[in-house]
Amino acid sequence: MIYIDADASPVKSAVIEEAAVFQLKSVFVFSFANHLTLEGEWVETVMVDRAFQSADLYIVNHAKPGDLVITDDYGLAGLILGKGCFAISSRGKEYTNENIDAMLSMRHLAQKARLAGRRTKGPKAMSSEHEYFFRNALRNILQRVL
Image (cartoon, rainbow, N blue to C red):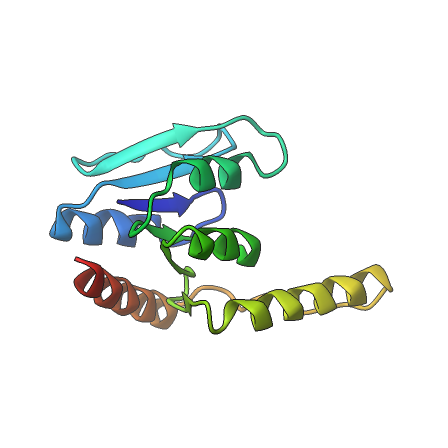
């Protein structure tokens, strides 16, 4: 099964298309009601409340070992890896037990810098190249897992 931290995910349509190819259920977890309705034979949408981290908690509580989670949240990725799940970002970066600690440390340092009044850069806008890389990474991990 694929779980998608869907509120800000730019790869919803790519996940729907690839999940259909692999005939794998994809669960899109939203905490905001203003999203489009996603449709497809292999698609499920779950609406959680708007409380802080509700979507993340839903995913952590429902994902099982071997499931794939798509998120850009390093904290969620770390929790998911601890459950024996796989995780990738919307840009196709696979989170692993070997790289998650460094990513969490970098996030912490950036957060400290912002609290100190420094400006930090966000990610570049999603491009067709990013989506291409994501689709390849998604296919590769699904082929490996399945």
